[in-house]
Image 1: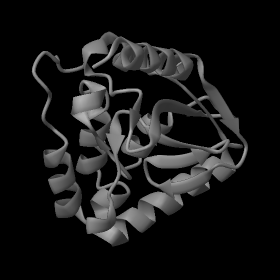
Image 2 (image 1 turned 180 degrees about the horizontal axis):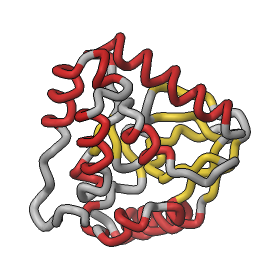
Image 3 (image 1 turned 45 degrees about the horizontal axis):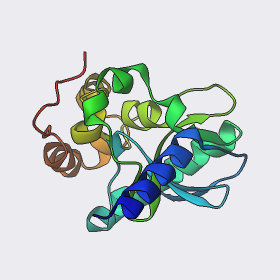
Image 4 (image 1 turned 180 degrees about the vertical axis):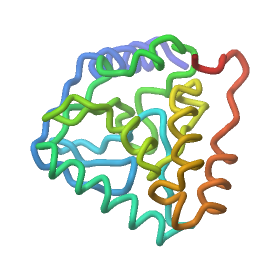
Length: 175
């Protein structure tokens, strides 16, 4: 890779680190992706059902939209990473993926983490590769109590959780 390309990549990453997006009415793409102030944002550390589990994807999408409507929008930034994610820096996702910014988001009204809320309510799973296991206990509790999608399709959610359970080498489980 050329020196120029490396310099551009470092500059782009620096811009993303200082980026802070606020939106009172972001468009929900699915249970872990939003259009926030004109930018596509992937919520870091979780995975919600996708097209291969269409019924679950629709329920997850509607739930996230309802939470955002209720709580007055979102704020997204790298500086909003959950404390558990900050402990596991080596597990963080890249700054972008598939044209999306990978950011942590909070609800404006109550400052709660979108990621933790979606997992705790049973509409997303912990994506350990990028969370370091930060949401495992929330996910286990939701599964045990059959909250959200765990009550609709336990086996489908269990399979998604298994697919997202592996940690890359060098990552340690969250506390």
